Image (cartoon, rainbow, N blue to C red; front, side, top):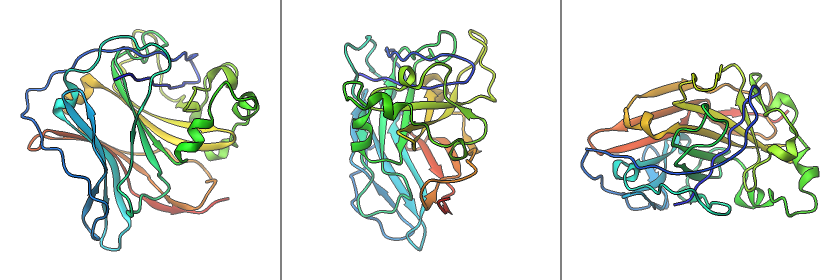
Length: 279
């Protein structure tokens, strides 16, 4: 599977590359669930699975008794970390498109574009470890398809940045022009400038990225290294939030990563959905 990831930090210039490596798991193979179109309140619905390595990856949604989303995430089997491609892709890589289960509330989230970056990407010594990207898109697929340098209005839309009040205070795009840093089929990536990333000293394990295009915030993106996933280190943290929102809806406020040894499954999820009003 070919993949590419983009990420940006205010302290480093970012050029996007992709590559590969293999992972190994000693846990028994997990059973891939059948997709469920809907789920009764208080239950879990699952989206269609896609192949990954020797296993599979899929979305899931947990809702409460009233049908409100509690957790929206991506799960993959332990086998998905094995037999991954290890060659530099040619041309523009294609993401694994993951749909959410239908007729289930996901707040402002629309779909997930999932990437495996076997050799990471530049800058060297920062994000060049093998890792996965989980693009949780607020925008629908048609918006990301607009991010095409071949389009006549690409530069105009790339340079149209959202008001900074719609991004967390600590987040910033990379240095350089928005046009040169906007990634085709994704957008401009904003990273947390509060993180100190000294090349070859920074211990990259996981980070949360935000993305924009044509004046709008369009995705949240956990970047997670394969080795950190294999360490089975749990993560539960609050998301840094912006001062204002561009549209009203239920927004996630938490970010979690967990490994279920019984099922041999990894989950990366957004939760704590809270109503926010546009302003």
